[in-house]
Amino acid sequence: MEWKISDGLTPYEEALTFMEARAEAIARGEAEECVWLLEHPPLYTAGTSARIEDLKEPDRFPVYTTKRGGQYTYHGPGQRVVYVMLDLNTRGKDVRRFVQMLEEWVIATLGEFGLTGHIREGRVGVWIERPDRPLTPSGLTAEDKIAAIGIRLRKWVSFHGISINVEPDLSHFAGIVPCGITEYGVTSLVDLGLPVTMEDVDVALRRQFDRVMGQAPLPEAS
Image 1 (cartoon, rainbow, N blue to C red):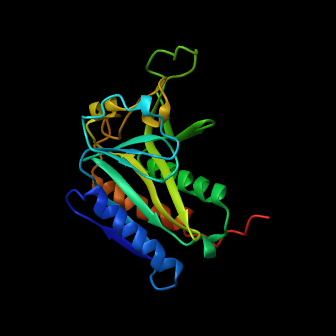
Image 2 (cartoon, one colour):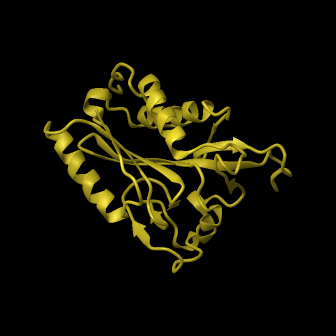
């Protein structure tokens, strides 16, 4: 397993080229698995389920069409992007369980900072309850999204991955309807009042990966 951490801002095209090449090499047995931690310059990505009406400000930042699952997402400085190039041929060919493990990894990482992340039916990503805010129009407890998840598989090797909002400019999310959801907001670790650095998050991600993702291979789905 290689852990790759990039300083500065990595262009999206560069990251995509690397991920695709590495996934192919892993599938051929010519490279080891890789987890890549980085930040991007401000941009929007459109997943396979993206609806054009959810791109509210198409000229604000570059927009990239990608074949990962999901809808529109934002990436930018202050957000830890985690690309996971992992071999499900050896981890069990169960896509649903793999996504659940990614969710568990994010939740366990947030737990190191005293936060309780939630998974909600019909809403992709990890959410934080905001009981200090008014109820939603539906009468539910207000919640904000703190992490996004979107992967793609090629020959049972994953790429793309997760993103956690550490200290991004939250106003940048206004150019899209994040993941097609209008009733809830977006938050970050620093927005929640936690003096957390990117390095703090990296340490927690690494520690919790070994606990959640580094367990014995999953059984293949029947």
